[in-house]
Amino acid sequence: TRIVVVGGVAAGMSAAARARRLDERAQIIVFEKDRYVSFANCGLPYHISGDIRDREDLLVVTPDDLSRRLNLEVYTEHEVIRIDRVAKTVKVRDQRNDSVLKEHYDKLILATGATPLRPSMPGVDHPYIFTLRNIPDMDAIKAVVDAGVFSAIVVGGGYIGVEMAEALRRRGLRVDLVEQSDQIMASLDPEMSRDLAYHMESYGVHVTLGKGVREFRGEDGRVEVRLDEDDVRFADMAILAVGVRPEVKLAREAGLEIGRCGGIRVDVHMRTSDPSIYAAGDAVEVRDAITGEWTLMPLAGPANRQGRIAADHIFGRESRYRRSQGSSILKVFDMTGGGTGVSEKSLRRAGIHYRKVYVHPNGHAAYYPGTHPMHLKLLFTADSGHLLGAQAVGFDGVDKRIDVLATAIHAGMTVYDLEELELSYAPPYGSAKDPVNIAGFVAA
Ligand code: FAD
Image 1 (cartoon, rainbow, N blue to C red):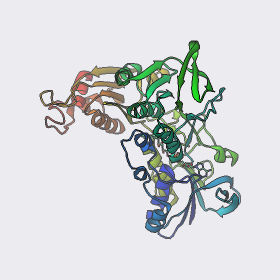
Image 2: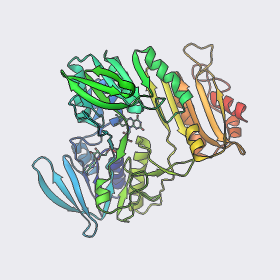
Image 3: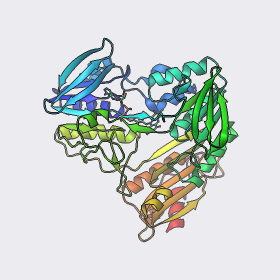
Image 4: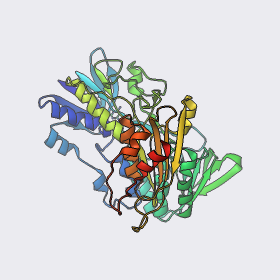
């Protein structure tokens, strides 16, 4: 079998590695248009901040490692520019010398990811307006910060925007974060994300909500950002973090089905509308675990699992990717915010009847030092008490509660099950009545 993988990061490399484990003899070829494969994109903001000191730590493996350890043929700076579904070939441009080659496939896996949005507005091509997706983006941002700029405007209050605002603030810059909607972290409900915004402010990040960017200008080497209501801000650099769009050009041109949300449509085995072509990761649409609607959830965990499932199916395994729950978590200076399942906003939009409770327990026993109350919100069905979603914001122990609740949602548990869960406890870690139990008591 000859497997060609397009895109050599999370989904693509998971698929390639899994394929090798399932078949020692398959020919597995990975084309990546950038210079790096298998890098840790989630770590990029933390190298800019200085938390991850060594740049090499982000480069998980090199093409040489992959060739030696897994016998994969990995070609960087090779962009796949066309798929011929009839001949089962891909056309590939070698960017180093601009030559074009053709490669045959038995099975093709598209793992092309998602591109940062750059809204078409005046001045958006200013050289000091950056987006962050890969190592070269990170290098460019870090070089400017290292050169000693004083201020930055971050546009967009999602995960990447918030992480970048923190990173730049920690490097000593004056940081403005502007977000068009009335809250940061859209995956949480507004009352849950509010403390995170206050916390950013307490660390000196100036947060502006409810104002969108109208245009950029650049004069005297500075970036001028014009917001709604004639609000004008200046900074030495700007980070544009207003979301990502699935990279589906190849798939669309090949006539593969693209869904309503703009991602590649796949079945539970990650097969596209052409049975010889699979797709995985940020480029595909998934079904929301709770509402069943098609949606986009560009997250690393799903991307890795989907890549693996595509490879499984190619080799005859019945693995399925059912749905995405959107479990996610974010560090905001000393605080943590996380969520899993559906938010109250989305439940209202979907017209699903629900109930909710809020509890504010400590992360661990109050008498053991170092804990704070967290806000924990639980959403569940009004009749049977089945869990629909959970969100938590606080200091210590937020991650573990979100993960317990993510597991509970996956398992189809109810609030009554939460009462009964027997969770590990010693004073430095929790309480004899864990926050998850308490949420269950209050909800039941
Ligand atoms: P990508 O990782 O984007 O890989 C796709 C690759 O395909 C790219 O390298 C691209 O160059 C290549 N490619 C595209 N088209 C072609 C072509 N025609 N030919 C050849 N190659 C091509 N998720 C989390 O869950 N938690 C986090 O904390 C988190 N933090 C993040 C922080 C940052 C700064 C970023 C950018 C993302 C973060 N994510 C996080 C999201 C996570 O990184 C993505 O969900 C995941 O990388 C998606 O994997 P993918 O393989 O689908 O796409």
